[in-house]
Length: 462
Ligand SMILES: C[S@@+](CC[C@H](N)C(=O)[O-])C[C@H]1O[C@@H](n2cnc3c(N)ncnc32)[C@H](O)[C@@H]1O
Ligand code: SF4
Image (tube, rainbow, N blue to C red; front, top):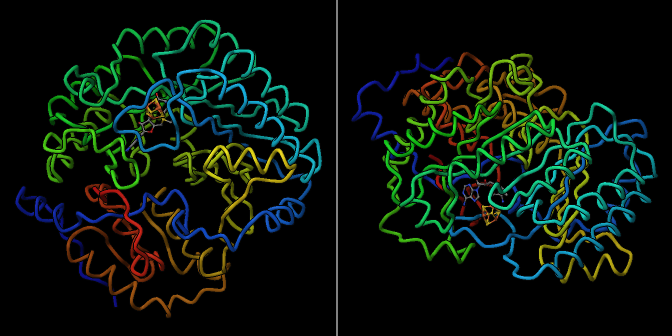
């Protein structure tokens, strides 16, 4: 039986109640199963055999993790450490090159690569010569396709002309600039002073070097942010004309990221305020002509991400929303997570453990998860919801051997959300209406089989 037609929450009081009811800690579903489900049962033996069984011609996606920054921003939730000296970074480069060689030999050299993502931390902490050196190592062992997307995360505060020159030389064609917020009081509280001029100069230099794709990262829910200040920062950031914008809700997890405890807790916006900040950023960006993509991204309608959404080719992975359709992500660096058709694997997070494995000539995998047919079915449902805000369970089920009739508990939960106006359901077709986009994680959580029985603490759902 179909659920009753969804009610649209129009009154502010209804909306406030809804936001508060969904104030749970939930995963961001950049994978399913999510990282807390990874265990030591999956290790380097699995990785070796999974790598060897990858189909020869399949184009790969590579992820390179650089876990260093000049200074820690107090809100940071990424896997990174602050370094004052360059020597640990230089030593890491040598290990990374060795890892690329070890993994490439397991895969067989010359595999085609359609996508490279340099993430962190701050990959541009690398000296220009090291950016070139790592890139040469990749090119020695892989065949980088001429139309490959090569993306890098950049901290504009430390981007020099020599870096930009090196990025252009190694074929980078998409840059993500960390901005977060432009208000001085907020910047002081988060320990990240970054003028608009610094960001504009970095954007300008990158464009002049021919690096055309530009993303900007913004955040809401940071200390002292208000609806007005977020709207103002967003409008100013739009002046830089990025193709894509990500607006991340600050994930406050001080029990995992100790430095976050240094933020003045009383200055953190509450749940309802966060919701309105996110709405303010979203309205400002959409009014400037961008399309909303999934939970927290926006893109110009002509951008490949918006086109992928329109053509239902959009995907979600650990780097967020992507046009990348490669069947495997081969990840390098401490803490990096890779995805192969059989499952997910993660490298040792501590640099010493990572170094020890690689120096011994072995992959540094310490945990992972092998996907069951049920995991694959639920992963596909969750990915479609996160990308397209709609999924037809009946059309996804057969390829995974799943039976929609066995999802009575999930359908009952969906019908409860439908009563709240968060979804509509017509038989097996579940759709999240536009006004309920911020509640996307709550809808996906219905299909997360592991959520209730594990104790991991995620960030706020809204
Ligand atoms: C690896 S960083 C970006 C590159 C560079 N290190 C920088 O900060 O400019 C990736 C992005 O994650 C986001 N981020 C970091 N910590 C976060 C947190 N605790 N909650 C939500 N988003 C966060 C920020 O928007 C940041 O730009
Ligand atoms: S936000 Fe970026 S620059 Fe700041 S600590 Fe995190 S990774 Fe480093």
